Image (cartoon, rainbow over all chains, first blue to last red; front, side, top):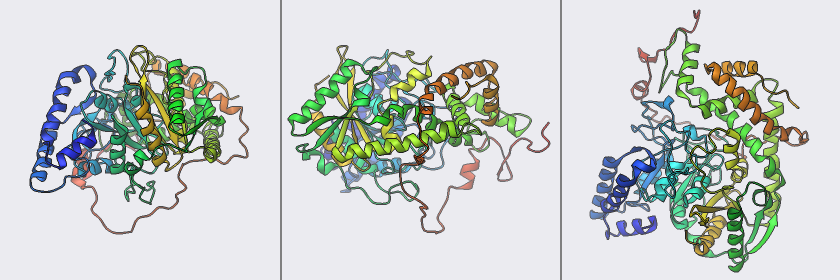
Length: 475
Length: 99
């Protein structure tokens, strides 16, 4: 059942939220030991929440647009009184004293939280192998990664442990795992969704967004979480129009561009490129026009991203110093305590990025690296602006390849970083982008097609995604 | 071209970043950061003197909310999360005249 169906039947009293939940928990109990989508399963709390939803319906109240919809929350979203690990040992034992705005909104809309989903430590990674609590496995082939960093959220939806999930996307961390797990994943426009209570990685890039099995479910969840939040000073002040009403508006007359630099390059698996071509053909048949377009600076986006994101991370993660929460490794003086705590609490990838970011920001290197990367960011914005004069939305691969095997890229940080090459430009620009499942390769591994749109282009992006979903080959 | 990162650079940066790296980690990060920064050298070839830097995708400035007293996070709840507290404050090891 989709989230739209569940919410409809629960609100009208045709189905009990508790029954819906038990179906999900049954699947979870059976397969979670193999998949490891969660750092924490909240079965008892979820049963209580589902019973409260059913009681509300029985007494004539409307629990809201997500009534009884089981949801997984990426474990970098703060939940008051409930452990929030961010996939890290350094937050050992921490129970946040507040709840993320997005979590408050989905719960207020009637969603039932099934658990906290596993992720790469501090959302740094493309495979969920950097979680301090062990990797998540791809439900389509457990020898392969689910993608990352929101791999637990993607795997939870793909396995039917939750109907929808929240993740966060800094360089592709929603879209890439969505593609690798065969589900829909949305990175909303920067500022559309509150970041309050999302543990910060790179604040100018991070954005919370939905995972779902269908485009309509992703739209339903986005409409619940989007909108201004006085607790996030980077939230866009004007309430956005909902996307759900425009889903079926079609693509007739839309101008679609295929981004050359992200599609026609070495390293993109032929089946992935073929999926993008097939998607473009389907849009053409539905009345859109399609052309190849160039975003020349996207060639430099990966390098710029891997300077900007670590730079912001090195600053954001300075707060994990053993003083106020989480792990402390004691020492004679405070500086040694800080250094030993961070050495013991952070994993290799987090240290690598803190080191890279600190270096890129340090005296003598700032101009050569960080400042240059920020200027590339301007070029990316300019190039996109030019292309969006001619196009309403763009297509590209989400991930250059299908899901890779566990361990295949862990020894080579650069190879892992290349997993994000197609998704990063939208983060640098602050634009909207989403991944839609589009068939499978010969081995049955899901393929994803990325739809890109300008800032606040969610309505047109979802129209394109709906059209693609209707023509996608089944996997 | 910038100089390739050295072991001494890595040790210095680790100190700035408050990371007590092991010798093995210093060796590993010297190699890995070198490779990553080498990849970033494609940016060095770009002439970007006339391009303004972008720090943030949104053109918002000075966002404020009404200056009203409102409940904050309860102090006891926050202190209960700390590794060490004393008299309603965070307790830390010696800062001045450290050994």
